[in-house]
Amino acid sequence: MFGVGLGEGPDASPSPPGQYRRMSVERLHLCIDVTRDGDAIAGTVTPGSGAVRKFSGRLGLFSTIDEEIEGIAPHGEPKESKDVDG
Image 1 (cartoon, rainbow, N blue to C red):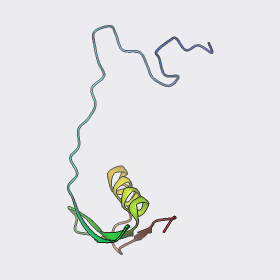
Image 2: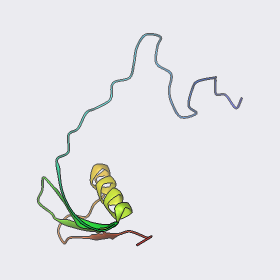
Image 3: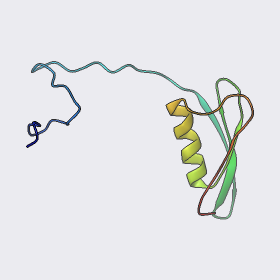
Image 4: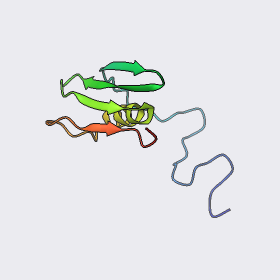
């Protein structure tokens, strides 16, 4: 269907049988400091660069970690991530 065989992603190039495409491995060190007040959490995430990022709420924590992993976090002035639910 639409030029895609079973078990293949539409944007994935097939590898020869028995061979796997190599993925690069990158290690990222994050220091996470969490303060819990009942069900609410807040704290900081500090990557190896030392740029402290504040967060509040679980979604704020998850998005801060995700931004650091994806390398899209601003460096320099700390950014605060807030939970949309809290």
